[in-house]
Amino acid sequence: MPNQSDSELDKNIQRDSATVRQDRGGSSQIDVARLANVSQAAVSRTFTQGASVSEETRTKVLAAAKELGYRPNVIARSLIRKSTNIIGLVVMRFTNPFYAQIIRDFTRGLQEQGYWTLILNIAQNQELEKTLPMALQYQVDGLIVTSSTLSSGLAAECVRSGTPVVMFNRYTSDTHTHVVRCDNIEGGKLVADAFLDTGHKRLAYIAGEEAASTNWERETGFIDRLKERGHRLSFRESAEDYSYDKGYEAARRLLQRDDPPDAIFCASDLIAMGALDLARYKLGIKIPEELSIIGFDDIPSAAWPSFELTTVKQPIKPLVDNTLQILMNAINKP
Image 1: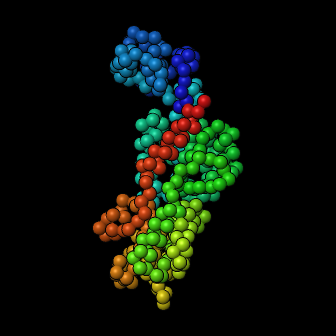
Image 2 (image 1 turned 45 degrees about the horizontal axis):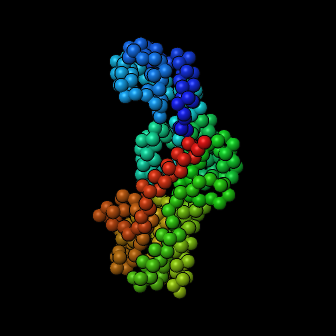
Image 3 (image 1 turned 60 degrees about the vertical axis):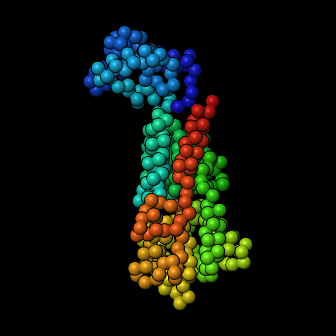
């Protein structure tokens, strides 16, 4: 919520006072003020984040509100202040443990700053064109878009509505929105170095979603480092998304060749887990003696004893913290 001066808050409080606001039990601000022996404006200031109120007054008001069962009407307050304290979070992959962790960290971080999260689940990128305008109708204070890309048209619509947008873990060059992502290119280079330093020769890449910036950045870093060191990519398969099942099938196509790879870089941990299980349990390949597999993300299950997957870690907490900081700065910008 934007920072407000005390005079601005007093004006809002006066407007609050003109509105009879009751909870389901029938108690109003007037009832709380009467019981606490304070002004109605003091009650409103107590329930206004960032408003100036003495600790003594706050204690009296909260005690009276508890006794009466009073709760402020958040919807009415948001209409008056033109701020809903709601952030829209667009997610496309609920089943991916990486994004499950992201959702948890974002919702916790937003709650700590006094915001609620409106989660918008889309099945594919095209649905964003329909879903995002709906989010704007809810008057969200800001948007975080994950696992999807924002078209220039949608970005312009957000600008017109005054809604700040941060792209998380995705990049697009033509929307002029804030972007927070890890260095996927450098991650791909680290994998190439790991394979070459351990003597691997026949190197493969299993791609995820072909249109995703994360996918081509990881692949670009991987291939560029191979070229820098005088090697090339021997094989490429596409899983088409980032799932275990698609990784399993892509690995089958690679490993049943007459000249299979001896190392596979997978665009995500779930793809790598599918490839790992196919190699071990279906084809009887010894890991890592006969085949090395590296994933990307470092989801919690990658460390399970049944996998013990080598992976590139995404620094989730710094990424989430940076996203929230950028979004809050944009929301509070004068």
